[in-house]
Image (cartoon, rainbow, N blue to C red; front, side):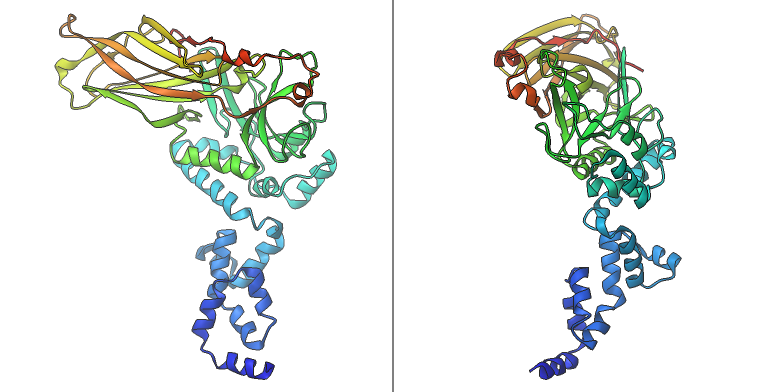
Length: 436
């Protein structure tokens, strides 16, 4: 029977066999090479390994020419060095390549701060130093780039208001290890980012302890109403390093996060938050500031950026000036607050054909979500008696997922009534200037 099978296999043409082999994973392809001499020859077919090199290592024809190797030899070389990361490397390498390609066009000086990848033995040494295992996707990313130099602006996004500035660096592995947490409330947590101005960091849980899930990424937020200093709440920003990093890169390279003054600003723009009244279009982006927020007491801080633009083809006689603003603010309970005031951030912008005026302001509230809408009142420059309103589209601000400290859930912290999250405490701060 075995002889007849081998005979029939030898009699089959190569093309259909190669087609079948092309659907196999590299592990199965290697297994096939031990079945028979014919499959051994076919499983070494260069185009099969070319596809696997592209899929797992993102290697191109130019890489092959530079190395002067066959595709199978090239695959073996990368697998020997990076084989433990084969399930993560392609995704993370693509994210890094996309980010660098985009930044090279938009703010090239940021690329200069990136460090070369760490070596395998360096990562092993860090694990021995902190007595804790790093996740494979984290290790994989740091084999590609070992974070960045401590510079401003940071790679992981910025935010600026008149009296507040935040810019987060992606820490290299040595600096991150120096900030590894063992204190109660933050045990087994490794900092991923750091801001010089605020001291803010995003942390990754290396172990599932104190109510956290392994690999969860978060901003820590001390419970200001608890007597126990280990009561630390968390604003969650990712469920794993890969999800956290690739979603951030996606927002950057798609333009969701704008580049402003050579920095990545983490504003989120809902494409529906656009309204046009006559010749004037208003659009809104928002961002949550964890460093100015808390879960206990419930205090959620948002900044919003508004763009006012007059169409280029508007008639010159339609030039106008903004006089006042009106806001209707609705919180999660459906309670409404109305705010009126002169100008925006102390300014009364004049709009002419093609003119764009942008400003940033902020608001705080004690419920986990809120939305704002309203209008600006303008007058025509040519006729001050001609007054009209321009619609501001409704935009929503929703607190990111958060988790209360396990200390509170166990009842050792002072209890906070759930009504605390439902107090009507919002404020429009359009009188504040945007930071530079």
